[in-house]
Image (cartoon, rainbow, N blue to C red; front, side, top):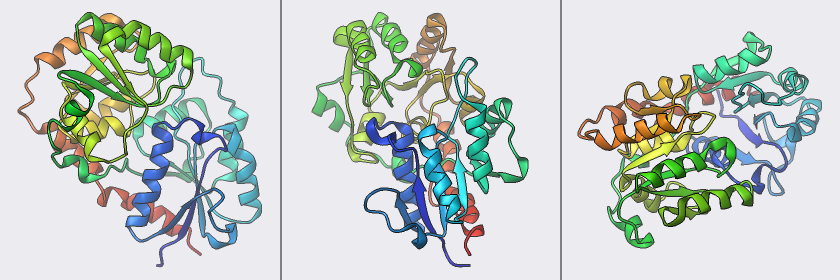
Length: 322
């Protein structure tokens, strides 16, 4: 069976503020290209729709529905990657999700927790469901110059967090807790709103450093992770690729306690209730006291490393090649 030609699409304003999801789109494209597939991300420089065998659509944001309707009209198979985590009280339209599901030929989930969460809120056609893996570049296992990041930014001891800075991610609480303990927090990412960023800066004082971006998969990122006291991500939704990458780098982890976190990290991370400053404070105390001599975390996460981890997604894409 020949490899399919794949067009990756998403909603039209996704890249105005790049976060984990947007970088994951680039990662998916790079991953598939490295395995021999022809892959483009939709935009001015992508080819005509007729030149693709299958469309992989990322996200169920309303801004992408009209695009998929055009794709369906052209009789192209659609694989939907929802990338959605719903919390109680979130305003997500069931009708919108139903429209996405009706247009799709398959729906992919990269964890049991994600699938369970989705099906809890929406009627999910089981016959369309497909299981794939999180895919992470194996370069995070490689050592970086230990003082590269620290020297560049004038740092000594610090915790680090990668991702969009916004209230749903809950950075402000982490800033407050870590400042009380005298720990500098490095936030790497763009802010969704200036007001939330300013609240974090005001709360952190001298104990916060914000870096808008660092080159993805770069030596400086590996140095930043490998030199950190621990990686922290305690948002109101599950962590993502950055937590996996941090764990592969040998970084200790403080994460929100959730079904997703337990599925991926088991007993090899430290967990906190994102709604409780006391819980987060206790988790930080625990991670600081922990011995990092064990390789259990790094070993357990290698199942997500490329190229093997991409096989399920490639097999699904191949099944829609005509």
